[in-house]
View 1 (cartoon, helix red, strand yellow):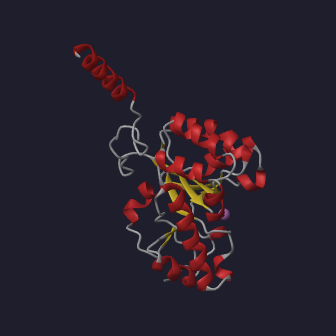
View 2 (tube, helix red, strand yellow; view 1 turned 135 degrees about the vertical axis):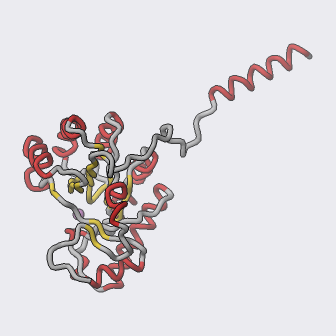
View 3 (spheres, protein in one colour; view 1 turned 60 degrees about the vertical axis):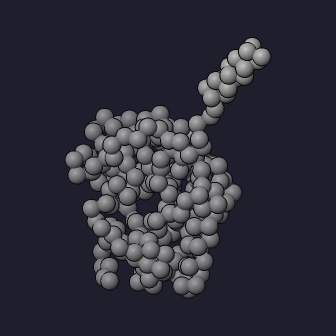
Length: 240
Ligand code: NI
């Protein structure tokens, strides 16, 4: 009898030791980065999750860097595992429409549907709903702003582009990214461009060596106090 209880206890102990961490567990919480105190930059990846997202996530994890992914609903739907991983590894998700139409050329009902279907796909994949919108091509007008406001979302553009989709060249992508890098910058990149993903270890290392903290867009725009329907950075000629 005694023997049996002991072995049961032993089994219980082993089970406790082997129990996996809960699925939502993340790395131990560190103090949040304060971009007023340190040099921050936000790398943003549009149109994904692209097929190279896994390699990109490995790189970001290796260098303890955070990024923001403006996802297309159609790919959130077809590659849900990447979406889930992005959230689990502490990255930020934004809405970049379902199928990438120019929002300034479609009716409000169609814009609404593009945004909602993407929210739904991301929620289904990762249990979260993005709070930021990046309209396709960065194209917005007051009508787009009104629909964004209905969803409670500000619109996020970028301060500099890597031009990765145009060059598709590792050296050119790195050069351009470092050229447009600046404190509190928001950099436009694409995780469907293989050369971007290939260039990323070197880009991340170089930025970190220059003293940058790679953070989420919401860390950068915190001080802007953006309201639903606002756009940031404000494009030339934009009036509300
Ligand atoms: Ni796009």
